[in-house]
Length: 393
Image (cartoon, rainbow, N blue to C red; front, side, top):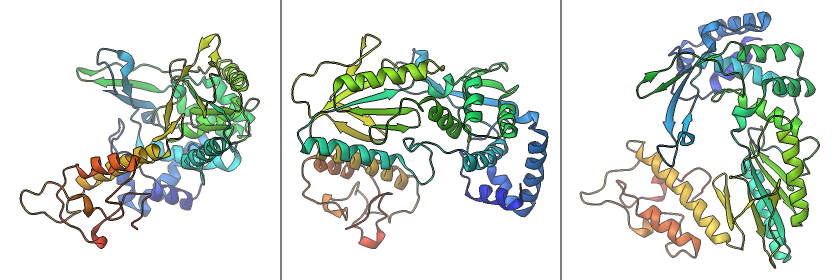
């Protein structure tokens, strides 16, 4: 490895401000400049040659926080592994090497360069609209993998890496990342003793998304169809077909391929939707158990409806992005000039780029964004910073 490779990764790498057990954030290396690049290059080359990383990197801290739902249910609590930022830089280096030799299938849209889940959402939207225009049924199953990262068998990971063409040296390097790894859980009453986790991928690891893509690529090799009939959003899978019988058969093939290799399809979160249903077409079953039949499905912040409700979908998406923009404005001091005392929010017409007389789904979206209290005043066009993905008319 040369210094240019390390400098490139160090410059573009953005990490959480939550550091691992060593309490060294990546900003420390960035502030040291060329000295850090020279040191890290020497360190990473020694790790690559010896295939052994420092023992300090093997310790992982897992803080527990409540996700949603009943606070007395253990399944509603989540943990994020806080790993050493220096180790994450090492993982980025290894990931860059692996991406050069491993080719992931076109059906995978999650964490892929020059691809986006937005592309898959657009392709699925076009497919649905074409079948609606033609007054034809389209049957979709949205497959959710139960604790996807946590269930990946380590031996299956090594096998999939070798089958994908990864050199044996890099297989051993990745194996070393998981060897003798220790985990400590932190909660309100203190920290637990260290313990081993011998199954699954590391949550919070910079390398885990690509390793998971390698596993899914190999496990689905015999069952996936061309896009847009099969699309994968990392651990979420969309299966489409023109008939209920065919989509049920494809779902069973996916279940057999995944569960035969250690993964598990969630029975409670996997859902079925028939778009433009002309008559009662029955239900889809998975191993004799009926799959939940839904009228709408949300994936990647976009909602699909069984019937043609495009404006409502657009309204929900608009509201989501405007709410994200409002959070950014709230966290950015001085983003907008101060308003006279007593002004809590702008009038409805002060949002440039939004129709003051909206239609259908836009109405509730705009009304709710207007009601967000902010230190506004009437702004000129040049003073308004639109959210990402939006432009001012």
